Amino acid sequence: TSAGTRTFPFTPTAHPTPAARRAELLVEPGFGQVFTDHTATATWTAGRGWHDEAVRASEPLVLHPAAAVLHYAQEIFEGLKAYRQPDGSVALFRPELNAARFAHSARRLSLPELPVDAFLEAVRGVVRADEAWVPEAPASLYLRPFTVATEAFLGVRPADEARFCVVACPAGPLFAGRDAGLTLWISAELSRAAPGGTGDAKCGGNYAAGLAAQTLARTHGCDQALFLDAAEHRWLEESGTMNVLLVTADGDLVTPPLGTILDGVTRRSVLELAAGHGLRAVERPVSVEELTAGCADGSITEVFAAGTAAVISPIIAFRSTAGGFTVGSGAPGPHTLALREELLDIQFGRVADPRGWRVSV
Ligand code: COI
Image 1: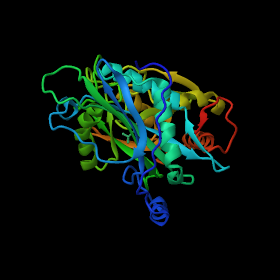
Image 2: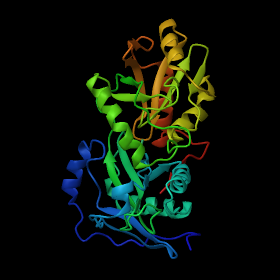
Image 3: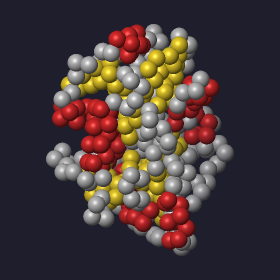
């Protein structure tokens, strides 16, 4: 019952945000604080499949206090952005990758899979309904699709009822004011994911499990934690809200392999852009020892983080219980900045798009 294209019929809100207020909110939207007027939603019921697809006024989600998501965290989400183009139109960036990952996450969390077409229709529906909320570059409209288990049932099993929803928020950079580069706390004890776990699914539980390390990072004056593998506490994984990549002096763009980390759309895109920047894309394990020694002897010249929210953020230093060290000169590196610029130029429609990454709304 859940195959094929579905449409999300649109009913405009009776109470749109006044244009003057919207303009005010768009000046400095921050990240994830200001929400638009409409949401897409659909309900799934076992035996019936997806139904009641709609794009309509944003409203509170009413849940029974025993809803499974509130107890067992049966939840998945996505993050993607809509970009204002020079001709005034709006484009998404490789949204089919988000749709595919959403389906992968659904399988891992025993939630119903939303067909790729329905995912894209829902996202498009919200962007069309709230087109006026898409900011001018460099800001964009961040879209957050998610599915939660809504069945009121305290036994532990996959819920028989779920709700899909897309909320949208105009968004500036995730790390506002940190253009000079981030410092990461190498999280030696607190792990994010283990083999066979949910590390490659985009589920709320991964983020909840990462908060303690993030808080620890903050108390050590760092912007974010860098997670290591759970078995040896030795191999670089990811940073909780972004993937990590490094540039070597001999021209490799190196990043940890998939498995227990998120298959980031920005990560993947940057690996595909590498050759055009004279870099060889290499997915292989990287140890803390290699990172530390490479930053000391200059064989690692740049490190950066990649994510939809984080875009490409230079990492200029690391700290851990063993001390701290700087990457290169302690300033954003040239490859980092060039890759960032090319990615943003593609997303905002300022250059040609030979790979077909932009998808018009
Ligand atoms: C994104 O980059 O879209 C993310 O999901 C990170 C977010 C949790 C802030």
